[in-house]
Image (cartoon, rainbow, N blue to C red; front, top):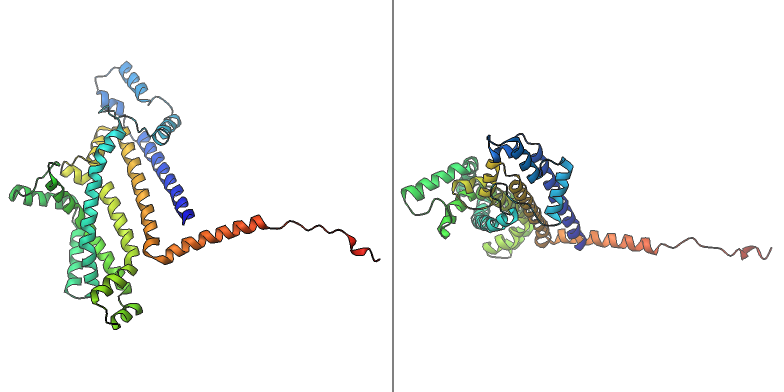
Length: 339
């Protein structure tokens, strides 16, 4: 298991490094000159050249890439914002907890609501609950999140006045972003739960558990759901990364001061250090989260954990045999003395 974790950590590092190289290359070759946006049209050629030298844009591409990778991964320095003149890492650390809390609340709501609905729909296959889930899932998956968010603002903020429509003044400010950002994930996870439970609902061990007189609740959550958790865990992990990494639109609509709003503002101003820093941090977060998802597979399904352990044991035995392999035997040559 330790070998597998080490292998996945190395892959995670390579993914983050690759994401950093890709985003730097894209931002370097994208059309337009950020110095013209920063200085405006009234700047002289001397001011323009001085600003490019100050930002390091007058150096060759490979040197710029090396400086960025060296500072980001060896010195943990993502640079300073060109428009705010503040460190990018400090800005990320200030906003990331809010976005992370928003994602945590969204995934809790998604899991608590979607899994029981999906299990209930699978048990009552082709019934009213099942058909209702299919129709609701098609509707809410097709509806754009920003449109649903605007409808919720009109209803609960403008008409009823129950909830705030922007900012983070109190805990109520999280309700509308969480609900509007979770509806599509709830429907997707509920459908995945339904499909996973349908694969095991008619299994022999489920029939045996029911024949022993077990309570239906214990059969569902003690035998049926644990054997259907692998696809569900994958979907939960993907939903969490989408909630945290894909909050640009939601945070813009609700003026939520998180990483998404920070990134969208940087894109509009061509603030390259902020864009690169946000992408690198989000890539690292996503890679680490998917590592935990892979480790959760082994915790939920002992067969997967046994495969990890057996593969590591086989590699260890092969290496041990290589070290113990005997060398060529040397004969003394006394076999012909009788002749």
